Image (cartoon, rainbow, N blue to C red; front, side, top):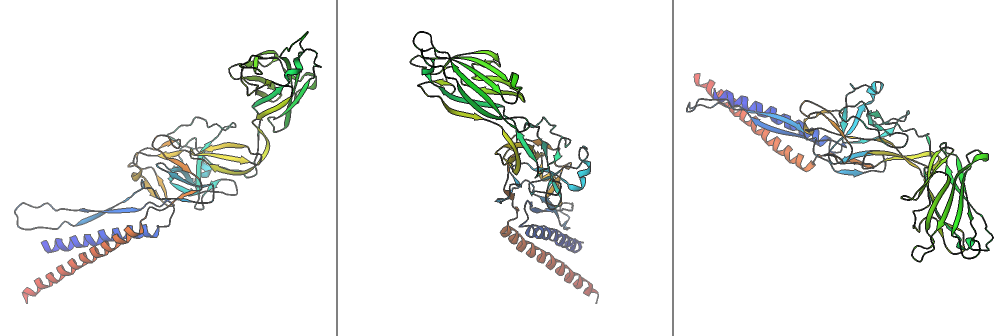
Length: 439
């Protein structure tokens, strides 16, 4: 009967609008929740098939379907903590519940994803949120490089652990010498004064060592200048009886165009000279070190000008043992530790998780999501590669709820609900009129 179908359709309308009201309520209540993705409710009509020209119509009604719009991005909000992390663009941060920590290293751990989080270290140094979401990443090698990892599995991911009491040393691997030697010391009749130079470097254990370098001129015989020097390099960390790690003969140019620059370098012992880079490959007690003295004709390395001995520019890498002062994450997802000696080292990389259909992910508590048959398989990208965006520290992602739009939808939903209730009331009155026919 058409009146019965009208009542059933309006009952379905009440249920559909109740569902929409629940979605609106959820959106409004989470308008200040970081990382919240709003729920969108769509109505779909249901049609009861009828014979054409039958002269009657049965109402099919309506049903509601909801979808969480995970691919929508909320506004980025700046904070004052480096481990407040968000994703600017596509991609999500890999996390896991702290209850699964004992199973780390297994490939059956459920991978969770979130677009933002406020991560702090717990008593064990594990970076996690107040709700127990542990931030996952790839640990770096001792030299700060990230090993090659599988991109379609969680096996390589580990909880990020920051030990606030850790210390670290950065051994010196490269050094650059900018020194001017007095040209007049190679002139005939000069006293042949030896000039010493001590340059500090840092060993593998953070100890302070030095390269003791002497420059001895070869005085010209007769007249003029020889423009030739002997350079001897000693290592303070080596055995004093055998601490010479390099001996070289340096000849300087005296032409009008390149006067004062290196013309040739001859290795008498120790590591060789590379004219393409200007480097000496030396072997100190703790390992190899490259000392750059300048390419041939280069005015930025060793020079021979005027009558003054002057170290003009000496630089080196490395640092002594330092204490951890802070950690930050850059746009590529690298977590870098900074020490009080000024040394900075990469300790982890946070990959970004992406799936073909983000809106098909299963939504869980605490603004986390999990792969489902509708989302497709996940892939771990380097931030900024492929479709993914950048990682932002000192940042949280705000809710995607638009209060004005939700209140407008709330008014529409209330009117629609009232209208469906009115239809039910009208059908009830019509049924009463039908029963009165038999009086």
